[in-house]
Amino acid sequence: MPTVSVERDALFTNLGHTYTDEEFDELCFEFGVELDEITSEREEALKNENAKLTKQELESLSTTVIYKIDVPANRYDLLCIEGIVRALKIFLCEMDAPTYKIVEPSNNARQCMTVLKATNPIRPYAVCAVLRDVTFTPERYASFIDLQDQLHRNLCRQRTLVAIGTHDLDTIQGPFTYNAETPRDISFVPLTHDVEFNAADLMEEYLNDPACKHLKPYVPIIYDAEKYPVIRDVNGVVLSLPPMINGAHSKITLDTKNVFIECTATDLTKANIVLDTVVTMFSEHCAAPFTVEPVDVKYEDESVSKGYTTPQLFLRKETAAIDFVNSLIGIDLPAEEMVKLCEKVQLGPASLLSEGTVLEVTVPPTRSDILHAVDVAEDIGIAFGYNNIVKRVPTTCTVGGEQPLNALGDLLREEISRAGYVEVLTHGLSSCHENFTALRKPVTPAVELLNPANVEYQVVRTTLLTGLLKTLQHNKSASFTKGFKLFEISDIVLPDDEHVVCESIVGARNCRRVCAVYAGPTSGFEIIHGLVDRIMTLCEVSPEEAYIANSAKGDEEKYRVAREGYFYTIKESTEETFFPGRCADILLTYPGSGGAQLKIGSFGILHPEVLKSFDIQYPASSVELDLEPLL
Image 1 (cartoon, one colour):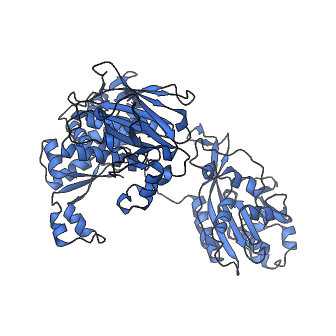
Image 2 (image 1 turned 90 degrees about the horizontal axis):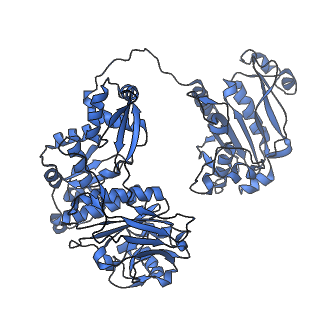
Image 3 (image 1 turned 90 degrees about the vertical axis):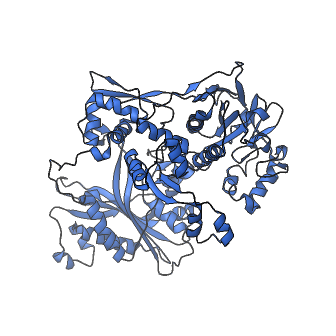
């Protein structure tokens, strides 16, 4: 959860109330946020063991009380004091939710931003807005900068998705151009310095200058690109080098009256949310409060976008059934009362549909967190008051217990660990190549990600073996002299057009599996084979007569504890992941199968090509089998 630091006195002045610390803590709880800490600059310095300050430096630090407030990660409207004060006043019914207006400039000449196609490979989107007749004070200026920092850390994902630039509009002249140029061709004076740099030298400066360490984490975003993004005005003046730094020429000061805001992005939806948040929070300081001027954004490459006008400041509608809201919260509130409560959480005006059985709310541009009826119900619960919900004993009497499949998995984890195997927990996503091709398997249907973050996260895994082999790959420095044993018990996901969850066909199902790998000086086939027999023994599954006859343990089988009707055997496998002739399928016969044998897994010596794909330098064997049929 993001933590917002605000001065207590400034907060109370804006709220028009004075609270004790306990009273404000209770107000935060009622509103759905948390007062995490009460501190000051000096107190923070004293608690910081790494801060080596002299006595004079400590005494110079402020003792003004600071409230640190934890806010929900998706409540971007609460990341500054303006948003917190506005939301609390509306919650306390001391003000109405404002109406945000897009107004045309007085000369009817909108500013314009042209996005050139050279930006497509690096940051293809831009959105803009203008705030007119803004009045800055030192406190408002600090809050303005802090909001941008908070957004960069949270929604903007450290500027990788969106980068915000704000400029004194009176020092620059539109129309503006967003382009990508070679680093040596971009020369300007950045905010952090008093001398001119070209972009290439500036990146090196940020990498090596301790005074710029706060910007160093953002350098890799564009460092290796052939061209860097840059925004210029009609005279060629550099406004900013996204996502790094703004130019000193258009620096905002306390005397700034007109603010030009630009956001460059790799995600247009996130960019619009960021822009809407900035303008809705600080348009209250305009001469005409809660107004903003639009900017036309045009694209040279219309395949990216045909252009648009920003900010959008959309109002949208969401619905929730009255019975659903009451059931979820645990109350019995009349529909008309819900309509009134929506005003307290900025979801008004609300109305009733379908003869009063459905609540329709109006979602303002500040509430991008409202995505579903559950979100509406949560806010109504906050408006109603958590403390007002009557505690009731449940009408049903139930006893909780562990799911049988989970219980079996926990018991097997203990036993396999006792056999000398180390448990690992690997990632549930994989690349298509590693999940199929590297294992010498044909590419078959799998649950795919629509927009994977990188090639490593293309599909949801259909096998646990990939994760174990990657673990061996990244532990090549470990000793393999006595063998290296790994195992994992976890879920894979398989496409399934018939599997039903909550009366819906979801198109996929989870399958719990156990997978183990042995790698060492020898292939260890007999070690993995022994583990298969051990797992079956623990699950009280008896080997078939023919399997016993082929073993030296015939007399021991007389004393095996086994479930009636459960038998297993193995037969030669054709799995291409394994070495030909050195692998077997595990076949299970169970009550109700009519004598038919169900393949529940395979084990064997891994094929050399599989080992080469994962850069494993020792022979290895593995087993992977389904656990659900063994219940």
